[in-house]
Image (cartoon, rainbow, N blue to C red; front, side):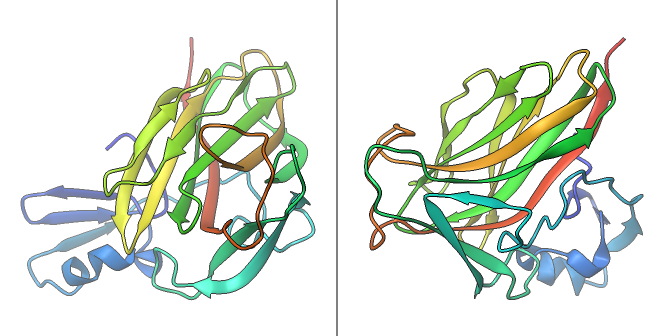
Length: 220
């Protein structure tokens, strides 16, 4: 597997590698209790995102949206999944953002990911923006069991992976080039492929959990 995430699973014959036994996802509970499984703990991950599971924190800026805590069971089995609810403002974007100077290694590919669970909104985008002006913002359509990439928008290796319980891990790679910082990370709601639209408080929800930004590979 090419991703060193917290709930990473690699299964070969009778072995199971997990990033953290304490955060084993719900879909792997049976394997966790299987006496044939051999567990090995991988090194800790350096996640650049602060409050990566708590989008209610003031560090996450909400634009035409609100976040509700403890709304749904998360992929790790805890009641920490949170609800993203857009407001009814017209002809605008609806998103949460973590700004700030994320210190990064120049010319290094970063793996950007978040776990999402669609509800009445099924099109969700994530964006990474570097200090050098390099950005990517793939959009994912989660209206089917497998999910799909609606548009890559400069993202490399965009992926959507169902992880059970209605949750998906959506991710992509971003190389900020010579930049030494990321400017912000966003999670957007989309409607019919559009980022700008009139919101609806009644029909707006999806769930989020576990935003990660971590180095993947340094380029020569």
